Image 1 (spheres, rainbow, N blue to C red):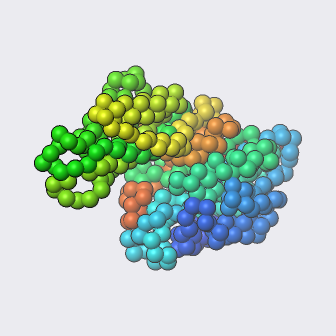
Image 2 (cartoon, rainbow, N blue to C red):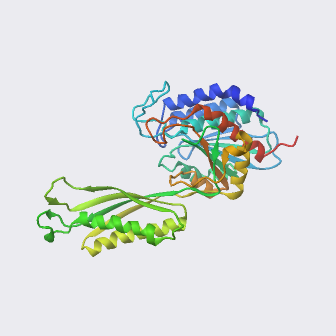
Image 3 (cartoon, helix red, strand yellow):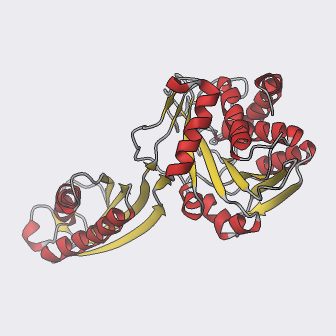
Amino acid sequence: MTTPDRLDNMLPEITAWRRDIHKNPELGYDVHRTAKFVADKLREFGVDEVVEGIGKTGVVGVIKGRAQLSGKTIGLRADMDALPIIEATDAQWASQTPGKMHACGHDGHTAMLLGAARALADSRDFDGSVVVIFQPAEEGGAGGLAMVQDGMMERFDIDEVYGMHNMPNLPLGEFAIRPGPLMAAADEFDIIIKGQGGHAAMPHVCIDPVVIASHTVLALQSITSRGVRPIDPLVISVTTMEVEGEAYNVIPQSVRMRGTLRAFDENVRLEAKKRVIEIAQQTATVFNATADVDYRDGYPPTVNHEAQTEFAVTVARQVVGHEKVDDNRDPMMGAEDFSYMLNERPGAFIFIGNGDSANLHHPEYDFNDDAIRYGCQYWVNLVDASMPLNR
């Protein structure tokens, strides 16, 4: 078994990896440097198999335990991509690429899983196999789906899969999780309302798309208040409204609206999607206008499996103590494409405390290096407890 002392001795090196990745952020699937860094490290650790190019630029490593009697394989996943944000941390390891930064802690996630991979490859004190998954394009690119569609689960015989994400303002050395829905589905829509423009002093000869858009925004809110059960969480937000021109005395020809829909239940999401389209189109019809709706399905809800969540709670409490693991965290309306992996295999997604820090996706955010030891130990303990070696 890998001891805490062994991991503590590795912390300076793991921290250096994290800061190197932070200095060199990459977006979406264009994570070639990071993927090469990860693949090179895995080979250096003596990982049994290293495969690049899964899900375009994802990297997978297979670590075999001393015994293979259990026949079990578990997957551990980290994300590698950054965000198109100008960094404002002034850290020594701040981004060296203008307009890109690791504002969500994926640098820390990658480093923690690399540290655990090294410890597991050194000890191999488990019965079965571990698949370490380094995923591109979590930030809107559905890299998790791309890896699944590339046959990752079947190719590496993954039985269960686990993920982790840091959480600002969750105290350092604490974890949070819940069974069932943890994060929401996140869809996007564009609605273009086409009316008849003209002089603002003569609205009676126009079909005013601004008025129609205003009615549409209010009508969409009725989906949440009257279209679903009050106990079913649903958010529909229209976030932008754009018109052609800026004149005070011109009624525009059209209005473009953009928005997002968030839900935890797939049936609620599908019904709300149907109603968004119907309300937009029929409201426009009432006013003798038309509405074109471009609705795009986003990430599905992130739903933790009951047994694997209970197991993750037990492991986290081994690492930090019973009272420092919240096993019934409130679900959040953010989205996460680890959901695609959980839809394929049982598993659980857990939050790890980042302490008092700026929020995710903020230019002053930085991953807390003091969280590394807890994350690495969680991964190692998860493997040891899931596939114990008979001694």
